[in-house]
Length: 129
Ligand code: SF4
Ligand code: SF4
Image 1 (cartoon, rainbow, N blue to C red):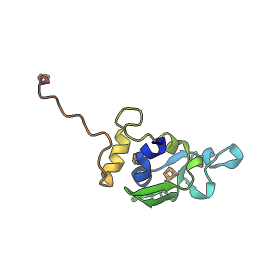
Image 2: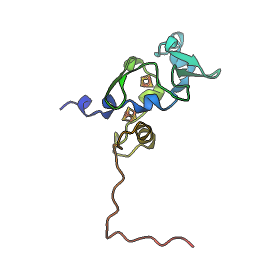
Image 3: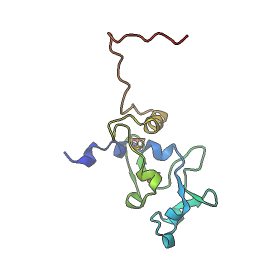
């Protein structure tokens, strides 16, 4: 089985339609070595750019294709900004990721790392006075 087949993001896309995807503006400046196509971004502040569609009360990145929770892909995947490359899915490094789970929950998707059930014989800590 390939690693790609195990990546839950291809059947999700929730974070790309939940968070503002902003980054230092040079990432969308080809003259400065940026890889993100500038026409797909807008300036947020003098120093920050944002993916079009994500600076909204109902965000959805202009580059997100497909149906959330079914099958999606990013049109600029190899050129995406650091904020996108650095976003881990929950469980990717063996730990739950709160941001991933929050975006999934907002789209009605189940958690990737459900909380562990409390062991029945686990002692209950007394509350601090
Ligand atoms: S919300 Fe999590 S699982 Fe969904 S696309 Fe983003 S990182 Fe991947
Ligand atoms: S550029 Fe790609 S990975 Fe980044 S928010 Fe848009 S669709 Fe998601």
